[in-house]
Structures are given as structure tokens and as C-alpha cells.
Length: 65
Image (cartoon, rainbow, N blue to C red; front, side, top):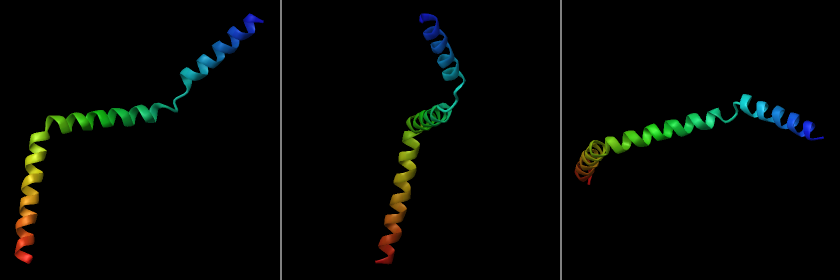
């Protein structure tokens, strides 16, 4: 009886280890971590770039009105 449970547990554990269905989730999480890290590192540059872009848009929109 206990031997059957051990055998069942062993088979389920091996199937779980061979299962790769969660690999896609791990890849997405790693990509997000890298992107967030890049945003943190280049935060000042991104902020400056966006500020300049919106200033230019604001200037050009004033010319239209």
C-alpha cells in the first residue's frame, strides 16, 4: 500500500520535472525584469528625452493655434 503511494509520488514528481509548460511564464518574467532594470538605469535619460519631445510638441501646437 505505502509502496504504491511512493511509486505514484515518484511518477508524478518525474512528470512535473519534465513538464515545460511554465517555461514561457519564466521567460516573460525575466524579460520584464530586464526591461524594468533598463528603465531604472536610464530613467534620467528617458525623462529628459520625453520632456524635450513634449516641449517640441507644445511649441508646434502653439504655432497651429
